[in-house]
Length: 279
Image (cartoon, rainbow, N blue to C red; front, side, top):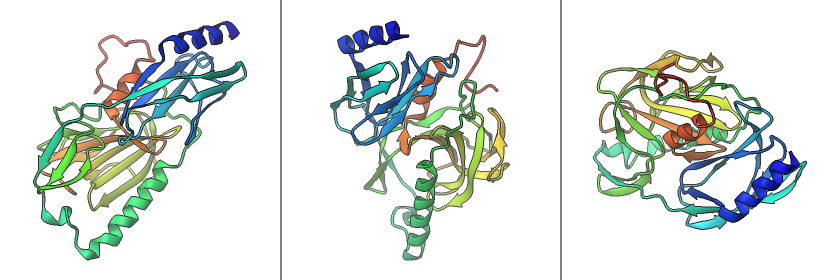
């Protein structure tokens, strides 16, 4: 093991690693021990999903992080290793949208509701369940065209309001929404902006989010399996038309969900004829 630690030290010192704002970096490591010490937070080293003697670190990067070099330090039983990570700016698109005016400038009576829903969601996302619920690759929540990518800066009714924290799947008629992987349901609720919402805890700080739903088929506290129908798509909340907004949170940070799925799934041997929307 010490040989592999020394080998990894040489490789990372020579080449380093590239990351991007708004995306998570899934970093394979030669051991499942220790911790990644960063300036603002520490990140636990997790067991590799295929070989538990190996490790992974999932490092989320905030959407607003400017280009810079990060130097987290991996401290384990085998020594200390500084891992240089160069953060680059992603080329995210811009979208101009028209929605109901009250969804851009909410009425006064809705402000407390919005604040309460935001606080409730943040409390969930900042809770790290030590247990990992998933053992298989992740799948997409439905088989449909993607109409809006993650990271788009969004102008609503002529006002720049936000960036897109997930991806949108076209769903012009109610379509079944599938759990992206095994987990436990932690929120089922109609919310002001997100509309019909389901949030699933997959353990170790990973949550998947499903917005604008028209029907719920799960309850809070219920375990769900990968590919299980959790409800139907709809047109609730702040929308321009029927669709599913699918997002993923990692350690309290919004992250590009499809990019994270691709990185996690790359840790598994490729399954014959497997698609991202099959159970």
